[in-house]
Length: 288
Image 1: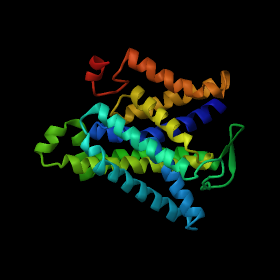
Image 2: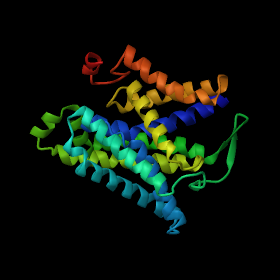
Image 3: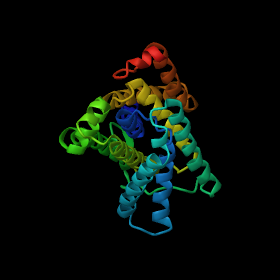
């Protein structure tokens, strides 16, 4: 029961880490290596609003989502648009931005274990003899609602269908009058907001530390590679596979082997099936 409960919670957390990365890559074919940095940055933005500006928790959440989304859109318009389509340059540029953000936060004094976000709901409940706090239950419920909401958005709104058109065939979308650069800005903004959404839900379970930006990036990449780059449903399935594998590893081998599961998943997928479980980019297999 403990493996089932905490495996589910861990899997939903991994899906939340990866959704923004998968969305940006699926729409603009842009590997946003600044994703983990935006996750940490949004945590510090929320902490500053709550503790320094003394804002209400709900106001801080909404403001953090908006500010992080705007920052993501600005990053694309100022930097990434200039290298879009050049794979190596995209990776170098976005990772350089991530380093600037994370190490800038460290240099600015945001380090140590003193930075935490408040939980949304205090207390815990016992399920099958296992005590689970309400914040973790909220993560599962809101994570499932977010995936469902994204599906509805991309299937029943004009902007969502334009984004799907970009993901399926950018040239055909251009011929139908869709502005690819504007859609890329929207995708980058949404991906950044998803990173902030994950941070607001998950950071209350621990501390806000700069190092978590690198870990979140690795986990998001692992989930997206195993599920198939550009496939949202593949990312969700991969999150559950890796999530339960991590919990089993912690139970039987120890917590210090947990990150190795994600790294091994990346290596094995690239060796056996580079396009992932549901990846649409079959040319990846030829390139690898």
